[in-house]
Image 1 (tube, rainbow, N blue to C red):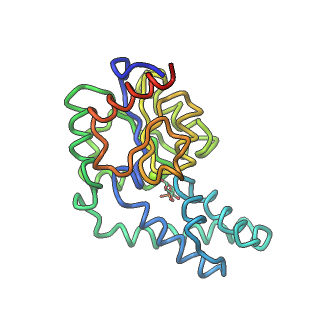
Image 2 (tube, rainbow, N blue to C red):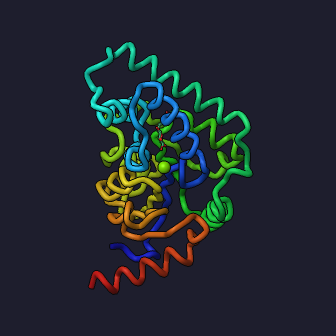
Length: 230
Ligand code: BG6
Ligand code: MG
């Protein structure tokens, strides 16, 4: 692993890392799963985290053994219905739903002139960042509509480093989802997993929650990891 001093950029997931919007995605998917007669479980919720809209619907249908029950047109209609419900939940979204410590962390890295890009699978991410009042901190954003593959494929994190004109190895990616940690690792960036360390066991560095995410804690964890890797 590179030294902390060699890090030049941060690549951010959005839902579940910067704001509590992953709970809104889960709520809207849960609603649709009920409608489709697929039993919602915590495991299914974890599998969907970080995964794009159509891939998520396909995962839900597969989970319920219904992968061959609907035409593509019907699936597009269901995905749009989920998005309408998600957008309704975003109506009242504001700064108060930024996860603990994340605004300070983003300001800290911006003040210290690290480059910052967004690596969210969500087509709603520009709207969410605006509503949170954080859009101005991002030097670049990856548009998920331009990608061939969703997380866990590394494409989005490879691109998130590239748009900053950095090598992935010079960047740290932050994720709350197992699919996202796999995507960071595949790109060659350093992965920080935020949440249950059992679910995010593949991350280079683990934090239990966003309050623990500070430059100092990341530097400390990287130092410790270097010693362990030796
Ligand atoms: C990810 C979320 O950030 O974006 C997923 O973790 C969501 O839950 C995915 O399905 C796609 O979002 P959207 O807003 O484009 O449907
Ligand atoms: Mg996420």
